Length: 242
Length: 153
Image 1 (cartoon, rainbow over the protein chains, first blue to last red):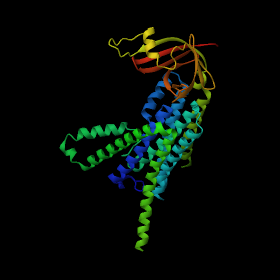
Image 2 (image 1 turned 45 degrees about the vertical axis):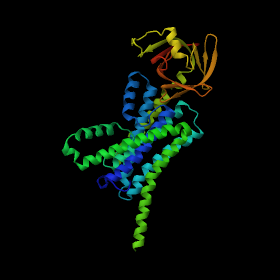
Image 3 (image 1 turned 90 degrees about the vertical axis):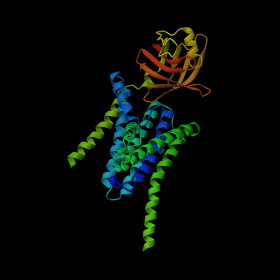
Image 4 (image 1 turned 60 degrees about the vertical axis):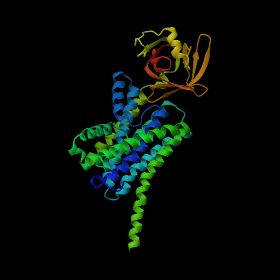
């Protein structure tokens, strides 16, 4: 999932990465909606809200939204920065680091929420800021290593692309195009995984509240350790050969 | 190369410092809402009734239908205390619930002692007026709007 970069990635690599990260993004987004009554990755919506708050002269709220958007931007920037600067030295480490940072952010939200959260507005805004940064990290990474074909934290583009593909499939020449069929499979997997993650998170939240973030971290850890185990397996095979 | 790094570092530094300055310079919603607010009117918008009428002021019977299952029912004066409690004064009643702000400070959440919660959208909040919206989907479907004036100095 994380070892290959850009055009060397297969459809299967992208489906695995897209599904697992979309699943965790769906979980995180619904958890934030249920706990903080705000989305953690609705960037388009936040631009509209920013404009509305500025128009109404609500400087504080506009400042908060601007900060959230800035942190999402910073997360995506940092992800791609790490990927392009460390990819040659060790692709796995370069790709796993943003996910590791995302886990740290979401783990912090979970631990703080479970033990220290007093439900003040500043706390809510800060925790949401951390979540938007984490979602920026994830979206930046998946888009960067998949040559912009996997984006998992919000589904506007995915839904649009899928609708375009489905309309293209009304013509036989497009239906028989393997690349387009593969793209449709990838988008369906992302949509399905996101929705599944969101539903599971919604149900889990009712029972375990902030601990739902530990489950999100666990699903992200799978992404990291799956590839780590593959690398180890490869090394062991090589050692056996000699 | 050093110039490029300088531009990048300045961009992120200005972003973070600017964000912190805006937050520090403007009072947040949690402080602005404190104090006593007197209920002025209930309005009802987007009514899902046969007539689909828009009512400027809500008649008492509709207000009663909408409000009877709400924590705020019969409250005429709301006192937001800094310790997170809200005292609701009615003509012959008084009760205390917990209040919290969620989202970017645009949602008021009220928590009853039995853990029942209600959420209201803060439409307007300035030194004089507080307007809350809430969506009713009980007997009468639509969006109700509660307007308050600041009182008690």
